[in-house]
Image (cartoon, rainbow, N blue to C red):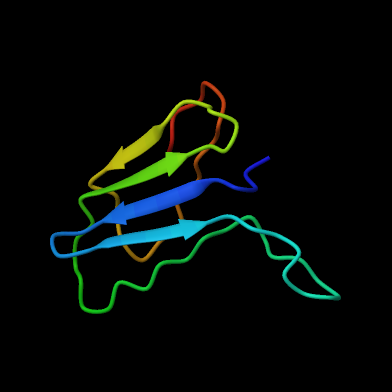
Length: 79
């Protein structure tokens, strides 16, 4: 489960941090997705995903912006 995963997005000027959570609403749950608003930033240096169960650190170097990236906790690589 991705619940509890900590995602850090590094840009030239900032570090953005988010976490996958669920159950914040009385009648709904959040999707296991994290969105980062980058403002005028045109480049992301890297994305790091740390799993709550101590799984392998996932790093995506120079990811494309304005798109979703799928990251898995198992042996498959991030895309």
